[in-house]
Image 1 (tube, helix red, strand yellow):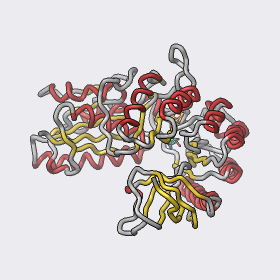
Image 2 (cartoon, rainbow, N blue to C red):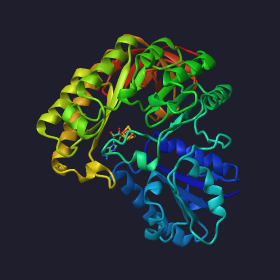
Image 3 (cartoon, helix red, strand yellow):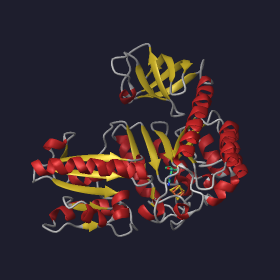
Length: 439
Ligand code: 5AD
Ligand code: SF4
């Protein structure tokens, strides 16, 4: 049987795309391997959101050229956002590449592309459709799974390539999502994470339209208390009272929202074209927190956006303190071609961005510790996950409903099972505890 190696660079959406590629090629007889040297086909699935992400993929391509020199039968492809953006330009730059395939419906076209010889195909028309409903998704985990509910984005933030790489926003039908979630439950999955670039704007263009909160209600009604439901990423302006209520009421929906703010300065937010002000963002957090007890809020922040002054940056720090985020992914602004921000005057020098990034990370470590300490003395529901174990530590590990990592002692637990853990200590990065009971 032919062997396939997939190398993924990027976010959860890229990971889900890799699982889709593996599913499509399993039907063609491919089995997965970790070892490049024994692979018949290597696919690099890469992100292009920041320049650094692209560089990683390019340097991996370099090492694969050597491997291909030793094994001329090896076929090599690039898939995903980077492929979508660069198209056949990649084939020109890397003459040893066999094919290039973009996002969305293109992922299902890989088997056809592999049958085209000797030309080197590029399937990178702007994606308009979805990954076909009748195609398989390969799952690594036996108990938690990503479920794509929508693709693309219509927001066109001035720094972001996603509307170009993943196309316009389009949603899967709720019946198709429900069918997938129910099948996962039948197979013993205990947690699903609904994925999309802006999940909470789900369903606006469906006929009839469906709200994201409506979708959560339907999923909750179908899975009862058997499956935990998470979702990411949410867009601030699409946070509604209906969503806050659904999160508060539905037992399966976890108490965590990832709500990228990007900046705490209204002036910068305006130039980022985020469509909300600092105050509006704070209002959305208040709306959610006043409805959902014990809600964890995490965020993304960009530092060094063109024209960001010391005062603008100070507002980002002050917003972080005001909200008291549970966690934050922080990035230095990366100028991406075709985006308006790349052409803006007053690009910020690298040293300034690096210094700001450091300050954001320091402040976040402090805030995370403060938030994590609030859990001490309480019992947490933990989904046991071996991947989070520290090797040979003898401790159990898993995640709370707030998505916090917990290491705990006090007995044997089953992977994919739920454990009740009393939290006894906290660091900025995880909680520590003692097992009370497991199921
Ligand atoms: N530069 C830096 N960070 C970016 N992000 C998106 N585009 C850029 C860019 N050009 C960040 C945002 C987004 C996260 C997924 O990546 O914070 O929320
Ligand atoms: Fe990019 Fe997110 Fe803005 Fe869409 S909402 S353009 S994915 S940053």
